[in-house]
Length: 109
Image (cartoon, rainbow, N blue to C red; front, side, top):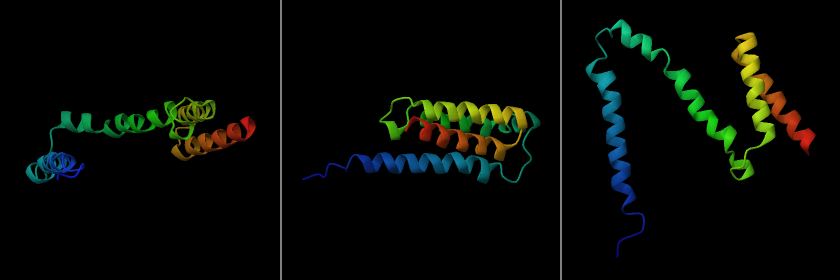
């Protein structure tokens, strides 16, 4: 009898090999050569593109509310964005979002 999780393991192995090959292409094949200036310019924006992709689902569909949008998390996201744009300081933006989240959660009960 085949266990129910048997089809998952080939997928996990394939994803692991694919991840290794993607990283090896930069580190192993190109790691000792200078990258072109146009590629370095594009790579500079990678964290800016990845971070909203990680944060947006947590704000719009939080697990704490069963996937329903929550006014406290939306307010905290807007406060974080506003503080980040106004101060250009990551710690100030994080602090503003933290204070806003817990203040609105306390206010809503």
